[in-house]
Length: 266
Image (cartoon, rainbow, N blue to C red; front, side):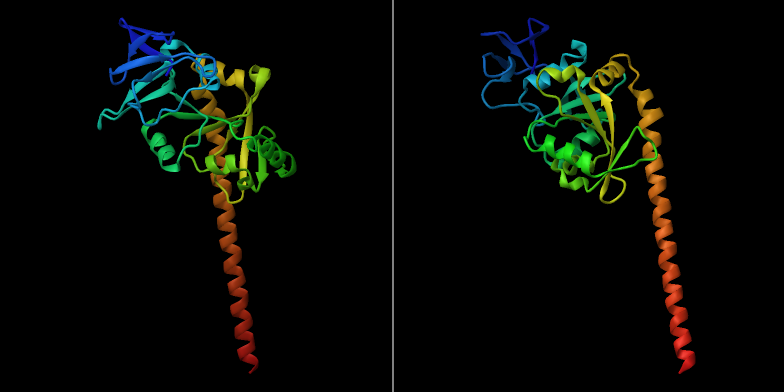
């Protein structure tokens, strides 16, 4: 983790320092070196939050886009007393989880349920195959969408990253940034799965995403852009299902008429 309590203050890790975990108040030791980002770790193998993953420069660079008081916020369930450390929690009560390592579906569902307003930002460069696979599908299997802002693609399950995160009731943004182009990079919002064998994506700049949260305007984006399009997709799929059911009944009716006609000629 980035922050620990040292003499009552929240500070970053420095070589040889010791501190206390802000969640469980157990001892932390500073881990500083050239191979990994400076961080605090629980003494021994203990970790008070099972959802925590080892932090990288990617995690740290994302956190540093937001005020320090928003970083590593302890979130407690008022009923159960369960608590976890959110990577970032904004003034708008949005929890941002920056996920790089693989996460089991059950844990993902647990986090979705624990945080009422959750945004996932997924590192699309963790596995080498994900980024080229994503852009190949985007190029070769894109269909025209009624709204030009959004990309409609077929066969999304051919991309493992999309397949893993498509079934989600939280907001998911895929981050394919790497190297020096991070500030100019695009995030891809992955709409939740509505229809079989197709997915919808929406590009948004990383800077815009950060600015919306820092200015407490992300709710406006959700209410005016994301939610209306999800509702439209759901309604379109409902209409499609109703039309399919109607055509199925019509086929059955025609078959019955044919059978009756054959019996009448016998």
